[in-house]
View 1: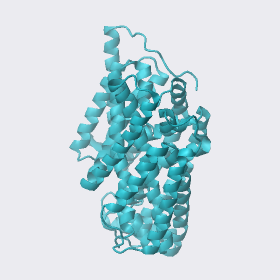
View 2: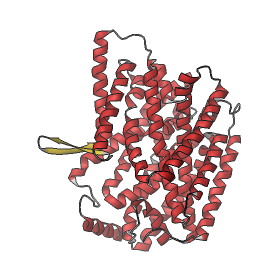
View 3: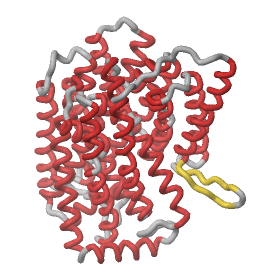
View 4: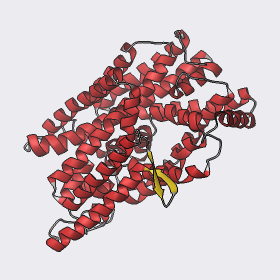
Length: 502
C-alpha cells in the first residue's frame, strides 16, 4: 500500500488545527520569559540564557529527536532490519558524554558571553583560521539537516493528499516569520506541545497496532519472514559482519551529536551547569521513545505495507490502520516535529555567521543590537536556502549531504573539547588535524557513493566501520604529530586554558 492519493478532509482539518495552534504559540513566544528586550544576540539567539531544567529538556529533546527521526528510523528498520536500531545505543552513549563535557563548556561560554562553539575555540586558541573552520563546518553541516526536516514535513503533507509545493512553502514561511520575531523562545515553547503529541502518537501506535495485527509475536514473525524473503544482510538480528559498523556508527554518532550548532544552542541557553547535568539524566527517556518509534518499521511489514519509498512507511502505516482524525493528529505531530529543530538549527547557523564571520571579519565594532539584527536576517536566508534545496534538488542529495555533515561536524570535536580539558594543543595543530580528518573522511565517503561506512581490507580480512569515526582518529593523530613538530620548533606559548571546575 502506498501513500494517500486523495485529500482526507478530516485528517487535513485536524492537521491544520494543531499547526495553527503552534503558529499562534510561536508568535506569542516573543513575550514569554522576556528579559531586558531582544535587541541582543543573547536574548534572540539563546533565550536570555534563562531556560531551566524542564524547558531545556523539551528544547534539547525537541531538536535532537526530529521529524526526520520519526520518518527515517522506522524507514531504515523497514529496509534493513536490526541494523536500523543503531540509533538506540548511540542515544544511550551520548548522555554520559553530555554529563561530563557540556557543563564545563556551558560554564566557559556563560562566563565570557560566548554564543557559539567557535567563540569558545577562538577564546581558547586565539586562532581566527581555526575559529572560521569550526564555524563554517557548523553551518555546512546544519544546512542539509534543515532540509531533511522539510523532507519529513513533505512526506506527511503528501500523505494527507496535498500535492504541489505551496503547502510546504507556506509552512516554512510561517516558521521563518515567528522565528524571526521570537528567536529561540519560539521553538522552546512549541517543543512542549510537539513532544507531548509525539509521545501520545507513539504510545498509542505501539499498543494498538500490534493488537490489530495479532500481537508482537505475529509482528516479529511476519517481519522476520519478510527479511528472509529479501535475503542479504537484512533480519531481526544483526549479522556478525554488521557488529563493527553498528558499534562504530553508534559511537561516532554519539560523539558528533552535541557538536551540532542546534544541540549546542540548547546547551548554551540553559541557566546553569546543573540544569545540563539533570538533562543528561532525564533525556534517556527519549531513547525509550526512539526504540518504540523504530518498531514501527517491523509493524509495517506485519501490516503488509509496501510504500513507494521507505520514507513513506510511517504515513502509509497510519493511513492503513487508524481513523482519519488520529492520522491527522499523528501527521501534525510529525510536521510540528520538523518546526522545532528547523528553527533551532537556523538560529544556531545564524549565531555562527554573525559572531564568527560578520563580527570577526566584516564589522568588528557591531553593536549587540546589530548582531541580533544580522542573526535574524541570516536565519531567514538559511531557511530559504533549505527550502530551495528541497524544492529543486532531489531529496537523495539532502540525505547524502546530511551523512557528510555528520562526518564533518565530528571533526570539530577535538578543537571544541580538548581545549576544555587539555593544555597541550595549539590552534595550528588542531586546524591541521581538522583539515586532515575532513579531507580523508570526505574522500572515503564520496568514493563509497556517500555511504556512512567504509570497508577496510587488512591481511585479507574486511573490516567495515563508520567513516566519520575513522576520520576523527586520523584528525587526532595528525593533530598530535603536528603539535609535536610545532613544539620542537617553537616552545608553546601563552594560550590560556579555559574551563576550570564546572
